[in-house]
Amino acid sequence: MSHRPNRLYLSSDALVANWRALARLSGAAACGAAVKADGYGLGAREVVPRLLDAGCRDLFVATWAEAAAIADLVVGRDATIAVLHGLREADLPLADLPGVRPVLSTAAQIARWRLVAPGQPCDVMVDTGMNRLGIGKAEVAGGLLDGLAIDTLLSHLACADEPGHALNETQRARFAALAGRTAATRMSLANSAGIALGAGYHFDLTRPGLALYGGVPVTGLAGAICPVATIAAEVLQCRTVRAGETVGYNATWRAERDVAVAVVNLGYADGYRRALSSRGCAFAGDTPLPVIGRVSMDLLALDASAAAVREGDWVRFDDDLVHVAAASGVSQYELLTGLADRFERMWS
Ligand SMILES: *Cc1c(COP(=O)(O)O)cnc(C)c1O
Image (cartoon, rainbow, N blue to C red; front, side, top):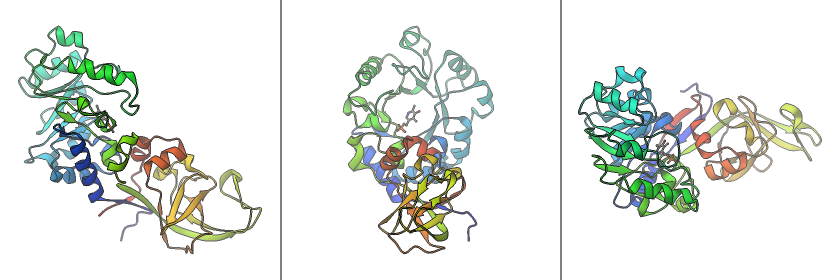
C-alpha cells in the first residue's frame, strides 16, 4: 500500500487517443510529441513507452538531463529524442547518448556539434518571428548550416493559440521560404495549437505537447481531446460549519447556513493552485463539491452539503483543464507542469 497522500489517475487510453487524434489532424505530416518537463508533469518515463507503442517516433525534450532520463526507452525503437535547448558546453559529456540529438539554435552550438559529432545528424531551429531560440534566415543564407547533416529544420509559432493573429501567417511564410535552402530532410513548425491552423502549417512533422496531456489550447481542438490526468484526494475530516462561521486561512469564506464541510489532503504544495481558493471544484460521483476558502499548502476544504461524504472517502477534482485554467487564471501549461512529485501516479 502506498503512503503517498493523494493520487493522480492517468489514462493510457486518453493519452494514446489524443496522440492518434493529433496524428490524424496532422494529415500527411508525421506526429511527434513534446515530452519535456517530465511529460508536462505526468511522468515522461510512463508517457514515452505508451506513445512509442502508438507509433510516435519523434520526441522532444528541453534539456540533455531530460533526454538522459528517457534515452534507454528509445533504444531499438527506431525513435529519436531531440533536445530543444541545443548543445551547451556543459552538455558535451552527454552528447553521444544513443538516439538523442540536439536542436541547434546558435552559431556557437553549431560549431560545437561540428567538433564533437562531425557528420552526425542534428536538428536546427530557425527563428521566424518569435525571437526566442533559433538562427536567422540571414545566417542560413550566409552558409552557417553548410555541410551539416540536418534531419529536421524547426521553427516555433508565437501565437498559434490565437488563430486570427497575423504573426501566424508571417511565420508560416518565412518558414516555407526556407524549403530547399538547407540540407534538412524534414521541416517542422506546428505545436498543438499550430496543428489546428491547418495543412499549411503541418510541413513534415508536428510537435504537440499540451494537447497530448488533455490541454485544449484552441477551441478548434475541443472535440478531439480528452482529459488524461485527474487529481484525487482523501477526506481527512468532516465537520459541520455553523452559519456565520468561517473556513480556512484569513477567514475568506463564511457559511450562510450550516454547511457540511470535508477537508481533504490536497494543497498548493501538490500543485493544486492557491488561485483556486473558493473557485475550484471536486466531485463525489457526479455531485460537485465546491472548494471553499483558501487552499492551504497541504489541505483544502470542500462544501459537501450536496453529497454524503465521509472521512476516508476519495474525491476527484475537476480535470477539464479549460475550466480549471479559467477558474484560476493559471495557464493549462502551468497547471500540468506544476503537478508535484507528491502524487501517487496511477496509470490505467
Ligand atoms: C513545448 C514546445 C512544443 C509543444 O508545444 P505545445 O504548445 O505544448 O503543443 C513544440 N515545439 C517547441 C519548440 C516547444 O518548445
